[in-house]
Length: 593
Image 1 (cartoon, rainbow, N blue to C red):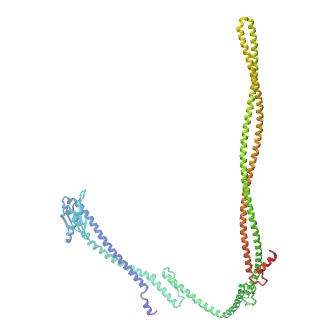
Image 2: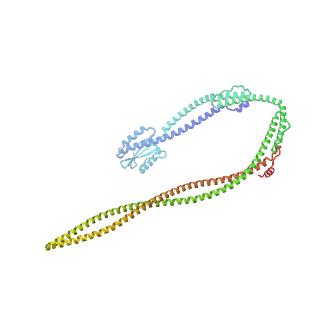
């Protein structure tokens, strides 16, 4: 390594890192110390202000009664106690009464503070609140007493923070010395650790890197097992060394391969020429094949390596010729079949449309017939209800007739009994008349003595005669009534027989009407099912018609595509006679298809 290189290198990394640590440590120490000094200074002043306020308030509370009753010696004792308790901090104190007159003074007050204290006393007397000067170390505290906080005086005091500041500065100097010692120890420890962890490993890796750079690839790179940046650099150097070793081996292999490649160059040139000839022949064959010529066989033999390619090409052409011939024949068959299917589909479409129209008319007629049969069934149900009601009325009439026959029979029986009674009455009348006649005979025999008895007998005879005549009239009337009753019984019996016959006929009619209504319902239900089936058949027929139309359209499309396929296939030259579309049309016309 030259002197110029050493000059350009400058300070080592170890020294740079050590200087950086030193600068950082000094900066942090100085900043922390300054901030700490400022904080301690501020806290000292705040503590002194709080202490002065609390102390003044305590003195004011203790001196309230003494100032109120002019016991100033107690105030002096309190001042002496506080001055002794706060040496160096409390400079002096004054006590003024309610009028602002100084009554007690102790300690040493700064001469320049007299006027400021007097001003503070006046402020306290006017506001009734504690007052401070701008520095905060001159303090005036009101002395109040009683429930109404009556002002009885003012306590003024002068405070100083110099003693605390001196102590703070002494502590700061000790802290600076301690910080410098800690910084020196930390710097030494950091230097040792930097030397052990960074500088020495980096030096070892740099030495190995220089050896690799000089071409020594057998060197062992140290510190590759470290997990820090030094280990990363060492592992990267080891990877680079391995790559350089591989590059050396690859270079040797490349030189050997170059020698072999030069030896094989002639063979490559000959192979390229054979390949060029094969490519040109196959290119011509593919060009002819693209133009539709399937007879472009390659007859000139190729080199040994490409002869199989020529055979495969020729075999492919032969396979294409056979396949294209088959496709052409199949295309013609498909076209012929598509035309036949197209004509059949047209006929089927027309027949399906006619069938759908006929089926639609049949469905309409069935709907009308179903409606008529439903109406007839409803009429039969109404007639059945009427016949059932007539049957019920006939049954009730039969019961009435039977009741009338029973009543007539009872009347006839009563008439016979009445005739028997009339016969008895007639006998009684005859016997009475006979007795009256005998009484009249006996009265005539008695003469004058029997005249009254004769009159009674005459009256009894007359009464018996009238009773006999009345009985005869009643008998005549009952006989006529009996004849009428017999005729009525006969008529009622005939009426009952007629009503019984009517009831039987009504029952037969009811049975027939019920059968008719049941048959009408069954016919209506059957026609409803037939109508539903016809509707489904009509829907299916409509769907079939739509499918037939779609099939017809598809067959026409198939016919067109078959023509296009036949025309497309006819472009290929296969070596045999190619049937064109015109030839096929002529053949189809000649065959009558």
